[in-house]
Length: 637
Image (cartoon, rainbow, N blue to C red):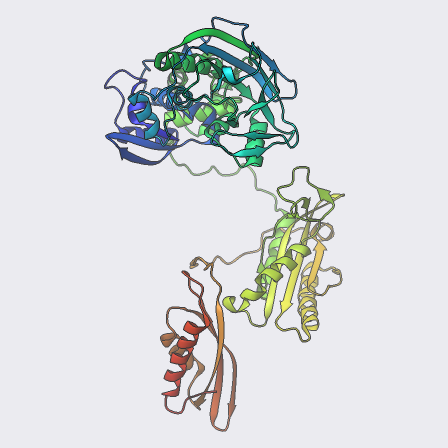
């Protein structure tokens, strides 16, 4: 959310707003992360990362000003949310209908006549353009200004473009295949899961509810009479509609974060006042339908719970001061604080929400780090975890690598109601399928990993069947080469199976072509208890290197050398002359004959910036071969 510093100043008395650097520090440590500050035309534009739990009240200049007011104990010069939200006068010149299934709970239509649509005043254009918004005309700019000023989306229709002597606005479900041309000319095809604002007389769709307006009743330079729309739409449906249409807007971003109902009335009052001020005209009145919720309910917070949860004693006077600065309506009864957040705060529902507010305002830097107290009792050994550790140790010693595969699959016994994708609509009922996928996906990377005899992996994880959740152990192997692969695979699996059977003292299922899998839960029940966890060696010197996204190139080279020349000497010569693109070199064969020794190596080349081609790798290999040939008694085979 981009915030204009001079715009913020309008909420406070002249000269009292702290500097940009002070705002950065306090907001960062108590409220939101600052993404950056840009100096633009003598003003500062602050980019604030407003998190989802505060999007309902802080995606606006007013919301950030209210936060600053609380942080600095700085009274706001004006706050429309603390004024009357009565809509007057009421008119019946416009009819508003809300269909029951339209996902609209409240709709206000404001009728204004005899406006003059023209260029916006310079101050309005400057403010909008400073935060990246293009000026269109004074009426449309007024709606955008209110959006970024108090966080309330509104929309304007040209009333004379609607059918009938008496305008009729209707919110209804869209029809499957129904089309609408949006502002800007883009056409969208709708479905009956979406809601539209329609001309109740002609049934023509005027706008996609909560997302974007249509071109049918667009305001232009000839517009004289307007209808201002301010409505409350279901946040879930708004989000789904925006995603389906690939049309996320500033309006939908606010609706989908569940703006407080009462903000609709304030939005209607503010946009009407601004349009009358900069476009003239006469207010005929407000028409509305639906209802508003009652806002937040009281939350009871035991005083002792505050210090217990935060880990620091916050004086009760500080607690009361913080809640007062946040404009929470608070009272104390015995050892309990009873408080209610302002209507625009949709995130305060349970005691922990209130305590979080107290903690961040008090300052997390005031909470000293402390060692955890000694446990009141010796924790029991988790038998399943202990045996899982033993299994990890046994398989690790046999050269197996542990992997974690997806729990969501394209088949199984438990189907998801809200699948993320068509190939992830079931919970897995085994681990073997994921291991085989891992073997398939990584087989071509074996040279890059220095694996030339085959891959050996395992997983310990939960699977989901009609009978419930189970913990399984699965092993997967894949030998190099096609010849006798199945035979070699089974030999590896039988060897691992034998070691696990010795550890667990029980027979395990038969191995398949590439995998072995068994239910650890059923095995655990028959095993003796363990009185301590197995020791695992901690490897401290581990360095992470980001993998390249580009493919590698594999080349082999074999070298005859005189007796007495070691393979390490040849290896070092290759490394020294193959350049930076050589990422791995492994010796895979050696034999002696007629007073000479042959060493064979795999060379793996890869770039982090581009895809290598055969020509440049060939030139590197030619250079390496020439240097080898120049060594006395050495020869490239």
